[in-house]
Image (cartoon, rainbow, N blue to C red; front, side):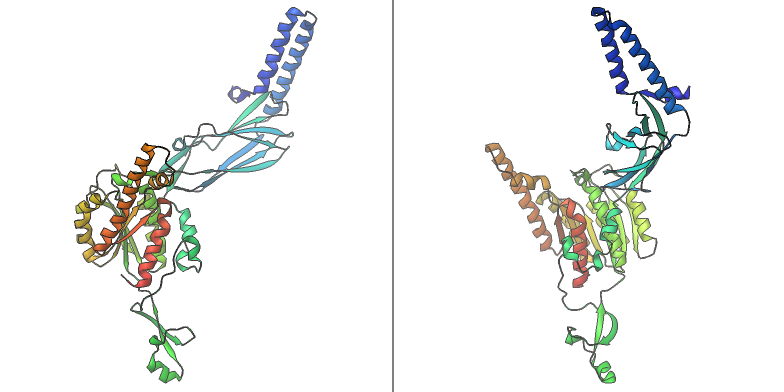
Length: 443
């Protein structure tokens, strides 16, 4: 009885059946239609049997598969490719229903395709996950119909596939060479004017036009009897830590992703660039306690360790304890390091409660506080007000936006660097700040 479970009646079957019923009703008023109605019925039954035999004459008549990446990239469009191959000797009409993971809440996924006799075909659709974790696909259901379109045969492929969703590794490829590209301005990165020189000597080379004459090495010049200059490079093997706040302030969503996930994606991309710049990348998270720690190192497996740690970050969005953060940094990070703190402050009062701890961290390390603009407030401020209530709302929105700028000034007053950014620009602005600090030799 397996064939019975795979048999489905198309809509066209019921349309014809309803037409036959109408004929029988009309035969009550016009008796001459009665015999014709039975003839149509027998023809209908005959075509239904023929259609059934065409579809079920062989058990190996169709093949389909779902091809996906080994892991999905959180917050990005991930391609899913469906491949189809028909073994039928006649054209078939296909209805494809893919059982999308429950996280996407897509309950009406249907695609219609036609394949020629013995033909093949592919199509692609995209999924944008907004949560890290395991995504379970159900069955790939394909309903094949012959040109008669009365009966459909169901084929089931790739049942119960699991794909993990990792932090945005697609952005790794996008920004991989950003730190070394001559076209950084295309991504919104500013050219940084180098002030003075870093202290790490690289080599002595011949002078060429444009070299700084202050770097002329007079001893080497005398030996070679031509101008020679010292060449310097950015200092390497400096510690850079990304500290991610897992508290309730990072639960706010923008474009489907929480601020926490934006920070996680940015940490992954920035870690890759830090390692390519020959520095040591590390990270940790904090809320009620400090956890998910990866020590700053430059080993070949460091990126995989960071990726696995970011994938496993879990939180209940409790109130964050900055005092515990300060104590943990003082205890475990003994060498002067660059610390990029991903958090969010909505009001100046909220900053002042945590400011003593931030000042304590900044005494021993270079601290960069990365926090977010409220995009919805920006949209509200730019909207034309139509009544008194909307004017009042805009004034309040402007007050909160002004407080964000006050927070930047307050941090600057105590020598703490800051990055105020929109969530979608977080990765670019974080990279920009890191490259700026390296170019100016501030660390």
